[in-house]
Image (cartoon, rainbow, N blue to C red; front, side, top):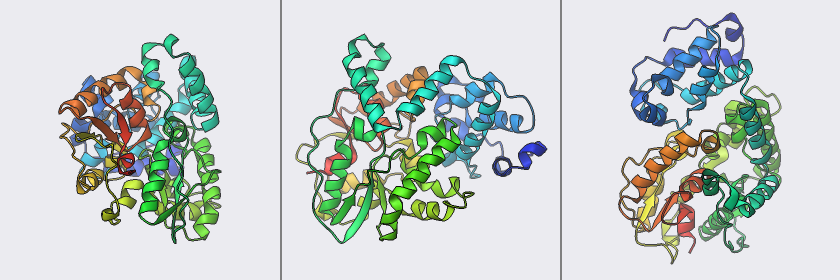
Length: 404
């Protein structure tokens, strides 16, 4: 793609990066067919190619408008377009840059600004999030129908963290939303790793990976979360931990991107590079271990539908990893039509774009339940919360299926 970026953008690293990415696009349109919002809306500007043209237009000096912002907001950042692209266009990185440029030039309506501010001030902080969720559960009968589905019942008891000591040690990343919404997930992961001869270390000083702020264009705020996590993990990195294990597939891609996002930070670039190399999705860890030491939990039903999150398939490139692992353990998986379609969660997307999100959820649930599963398994806390709103069967993280 030919570009003519303004001198202002060509003079800064983000502009140079955007120009490089734009020049790799050959207008082929393979991305369009894979885009969930284009499939729903049929508007070229609500597909990757159209959004690329919008961002190029702004970077070349044309005015950004509220319409531009709206089309960029509608993107789920599912990255299905990147998987389909024959030219290797780094669309998600371009979108990060383009959204920030537009955000700096277009003032949002007051309601939008307040909603985004509250999400950034509440969701990444487990104690604040827990308090808000507790209040929401108490008020659940009075909430609008859409929000009632988001406010799920409190999780049951989760058991104990394993106390076994092993020579192999890994950090197990808690995150922010997951310990509040589904504390059983990391507990199950720790017990599974324990059975594999791996000791899981929790670092209480670490917290949100930074994804919420990052995707809401609060770039510097996101980097502060990243630096805090690196500082919390670094003593254990120096002690030789084997990996930083992440059970939320939505967090893993960002932690793996710390190296790129902090590459210009002289104090953190080298450390971020090391952390990114150590970051592993739980599927990457378990799938290469001796599965003979594991078995399905006694309560696992005979028909399980697996929802493979976009962040697992497209952002991390782990297509088929969990399915192969579960089948290797003789967990019966039912077929799922259009298995890579997005459920509409996408971090805060389900709250900021509720209509599109619910349409995607309805389509996803129909595909997952078409072959009458008794349980739906997934790999990301956002998808877990989203699917529970509409599923007629229980929803669990796949690692819980191995917690026998």
